Image (tube, rainbow, N blue to C red; front, side):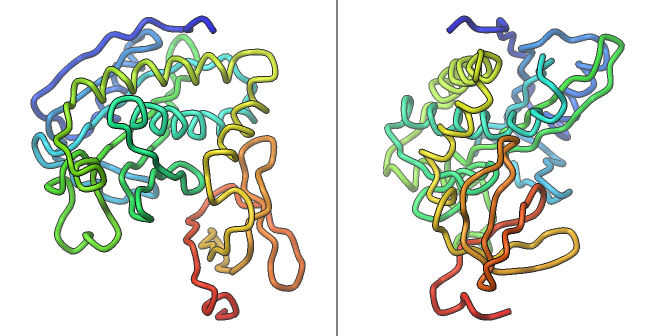
Length: 256
């Protein structure tokens, strides 16, 4: 499967945010495949304006400029493809098997290892997507109070991590998954692959914090655009396109 871009990597000792820098580069006409990597982020961002801790040399802080040739309703699949690419890269570079929590958090042992943030940028040559990926490489990547919910590659594998190996694998896997998404029937293939590599796709008991409601249910697969189907205890089906999804223990399923 031919790659759609040739990656170029810009490296920085410190940035407020790799996504902010990549968005600025995209607005100035940066080509598809431009990657921004920083040793440290001073104002790293996660989904829903959350802070992403980014201390020096503790994680991989990475953003890439993409200019998708996809219909607008398929753009949400970019984050699913990115999650698959991270999973692929950690398996290749670190021999680490991970899970994907909808839509794009990477988990090891049920704890968060990586977050992904997709943002759109209007440019003179059309709309671009900036994909930000933050991978915890060592336990120094996150504060003590998050230890119960976060983990790192080193903690999960018990081995030191070579950032350059992870970066090279990530760029390769992103190019591969991006090409797959653009191939004939690629959108359906990404949905199928995501579902095959996530325990959250089918039969997971979850609590959903959506924009206007909080509810419990059981996951019942994905829509063609990557939205999550959730069946409530009353037998209703809800389609989740935005929000937070958390796994539930069986004894909390009926707590509303």
